[in-house]
Length: 387
Image 1: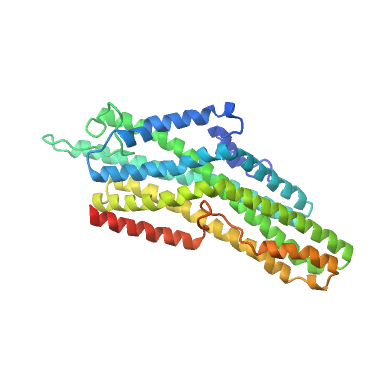
Image 2: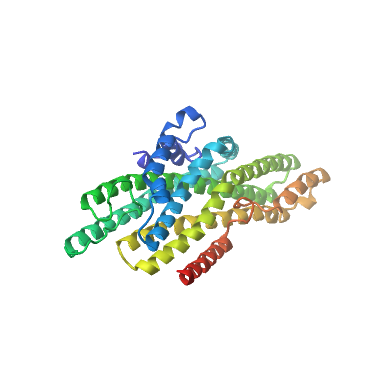
């Protein structure tokens, strides 16, 4: 399987996440996106249309289904936006690869990037295993609840079977017919597994890009700190010129990253507020049941993903701020006027915040995660009062 293939080239940018994207059909050439279109069709027919159009028996079922639908949309929105931004995406990959080629002539910087790529490769594998655990816990708890309901129900009364995803499925009587329920579970398991692969590819790609940008900023900081160890003016000038070139390249990368992530992060954090809210309300109404375990597993997966975005966004901002601090700490003011003029643009540009935003409305960092939790809890209390 693609996920468990070894890392062939430790200096290539995001090889494993890019393989997963190719497996899903994310490609610049529209004629090669047939797998992606097939996935869209299946998810719409099996999940989104039933959730939107076929109705529910109770309010808790409706809230659970809305939360599941938004969770699924949060995963798939990345694969709606990425094909529309393939020019920026491929440009970012090319610029990061160019940065790698420039700095890997020195062994210590080369080892930093090898360590980074190895970490991203391992993270993608472990994230795949983690999401497998989530999917199988959802499926296992649902099947256990379904069998428990079947063998303990009173023959005089009908009992609803728990579903792995809460939605009717056209002509199937999934809640009250055991055979129909098994068919529904099989169809939904396939949809969940598609979402699992998309979830892993999304995490490996987006987290990897953010982490890569943070690391290259850290390499620039190291190069700036080593300027004090350079004596001859011609060597100092050559090193400073390379730092300026790399800094301009990283600024371009950060803008491309921002352009790729804007709408994705807006959907992520807006959706998260409502998903947390609806899932909390569903668990409050239904308690710890097979469905509650399934909802809780989705909540854990979503919360983990959102927190990692905040963690990496905060790290990217801090690394950007370190450049101006490192430059101020050098002896640039003792250099000739020509070199001092070269330094000034770096200091000015590094004072502008580097980070990732949700459609330029707000920066993604630790504070945003806490504010999102507070907002979700406020909506939950409102729902609790209304219903």
